[in-house]
Image: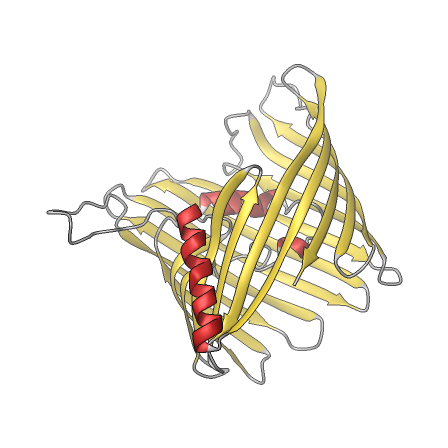
Length: 338
């Protein structure tokens, strides 16, 4: 990771000095304090964590070529999230290559961590990420995208690795090559923005590794309306993953409502649900998860935001099992820059 960062910063210097490239930076820091029920021994856990530290250089090479790179130090671990170049041949057609947000759920990486309504994304969104073989809601591959109908219709289609972190690296130094995760993932999203503040659309995703017959499929739809302080969002997702003819099916949705007062204070409430195994219990004995999130966002200034959330969690348990004790109270202190 250190070598990658060193090489990248050297490239930035070369671009800036010799190629006169446009170079910008942005990032954020999120520090959490959590207070939560521990179901194992019926005690309470509490403490601080550095949830996210993100740094993203970005820019362009002239009018039609954009680039970006994002690294993170999340929960004391270094990670590479984005590394891409985007050729905008026209407003109607562009080609993006590298690792970046998959054109799936708009509540994944398409929604910046800095702009989350509640401290965490809904459970169904987080589960979809892992179930789909994504890393940080990102995929690795090539995407074709553009805007049509006077920017009212956005489309994206991506061909990617079936698993983001499973890379194929043959080389001249090797006498033979082996890759156990052959296959492709396919992603597509359509999004309509008929009037200012309103957007709706859907996505699909499908992948298969040929050696293991591991399959992943998902689809979803959303309706968002955010304007004049009013914040309403609803999204539904469904999918399956596993060996062929042995897939685990899952589904869920969330609904968010919030209203920003004087651009400073925003009360928010969210209901979300996640069914992990098509009505059957998961490893924890849960057939269905239901979460009610109540929160307040306080925008101290453009770059500083405080969030306070209380998450009420109830589960539909298998017969004979007690309901889990896992409610959460947490606070997020966030500052960003660009």
